[in-house]
Image (cartoon, rainbow, N blue to C red; front, side, top):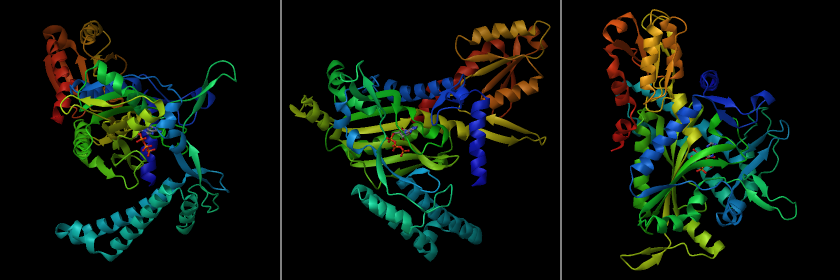
Length: 514
Ligand code: ATP
């Protein structure tokens, strides 16, 4: 656990030190769960956004984009269910005065039981060596079976109490399990209460005529209310999708996990409109496609897993998360939801307008069903960033910190370094820099010994360094150094752009999805 915390602290301080993420309004001691993206962060975020957009919109001729406003008519949120049902069950500890999400306290308790199972498994794996059959062990070992039974009973009871809004039972469960405040160890709890997560604001000048608005808690509703406009003007035929990237706002309570859970964040969502009855098939298709997108970035597959939801949201008939191994545990990165026709029907009901598709083949009107894929851009940033940050021990015993970002996402692709600050090398290096600038984000560094400059670029995540030396003046060749392998090759200066392009081109990476 201590190691996990240290790793996470490292990630946060590295993100600050290398100009990726700053606390918002830091000079005023910051604003909790709100962050700013700095000079390198903004580039990484832009590249992730573009990588998603290309995969979703450009590569699918039946998916189009949208950029709807953050403010929406307030009835939107009545129709979507957010006014009545976008709540978190909260509980306060009377001694520490800390507030928690009741379901998170219980889930953390379950995670501890699951960790015990893992411990039993790894102990047995060591004991039995190559003969170990994990599946059989988990299905027969009495201790493991007891832990499994215990955790599944807790999850079931919590899901059913939350479903029935039986908050008294949620509190009772916390008490029965002996869950203590992680901060103070106290078990002195208040009742569980529901708390709406939407931020309210007002439109208009005078107090009596002002209209109560919300900052959107998700981008999806902007897509639903525009469904028919897009379908008609784009002459879209079902199945088709609408994709959007934009800010969303939630008054989160448990907000101590850096950019994992923010109060202002960015979502990348896609609603795929389909014929009713085909949802099971499309749900599986999108689960698979989205996982392929993640894996195309070359991050080890063992970091990802699907988690099927036990407790379904009011709008869904199936839902799964793509979970990722973050530095503080395995958590949700993306949601894939089969939302039925809930949203469009509710908007029909509340607006009095028809939101139906006319099928030219069957000559029938219907309200389409929807499969949604929804990923937090900031969470994706954290997944990529934390996974890329590594401490390496080199052959000579020294260590280096290296940010092994997928080259396609790296903020700066090339650093151009004159070996020394004289003899015409800076001039030649600058000529190369200017040439490369047409294609990539590049940087120039002439300060300190070249070894130290390499280390700086390793730590900030630049995949290529090009060094211009005295030989370059004579034969127009340079040294190209790879960040990850530290391999160096000598190539003609005129070939640098093409060589780098090959490795950072989105096309090359996205092709792995096929
Ligand atoms: P969680 O259970 O972690 O609160 P959620 O199930 O409420 O997430 P959704 O409403 O399904 O999340 O939102 C879709 C995606 O948006 C999530 O998978 C996540 O990547 C991202 N997201 C949601 N809330 C936040 C937040 N507060 N900060 C950053 N990203 C978020």
